[in-house]
Length: 124
Image (cartoon, rainbow, N blue to C red; front, side, top):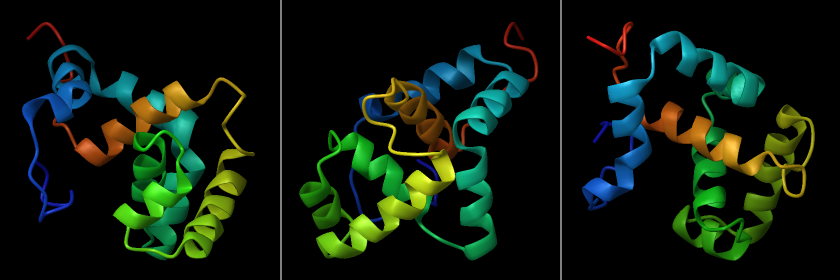
């Protein structure tokens, strides 16, 4: 588990399937390109403002886009979560629901949040 992930939580290895598979199979350049295309502006926004937008998107997607549950897990009031989601959607170019983007976003977020040490050559 990465030190940046929710440090007080307990995880099962299956929680990190995406990260493990990426680490074993994907070259760093492929991951970087995927993350840039799906989340580039959001990641830069988080870096500039030291925010929690990528984590918020991760939790929101992981809860099936359930704002009430996501707010609870993030220890936020629903209105605060909705403010964050508006900023996230602005950075992403709109609400990703119904546009076929959730799967790509979920994968990219897991790769960013997982911090896998990816190989330059997946066959090595």
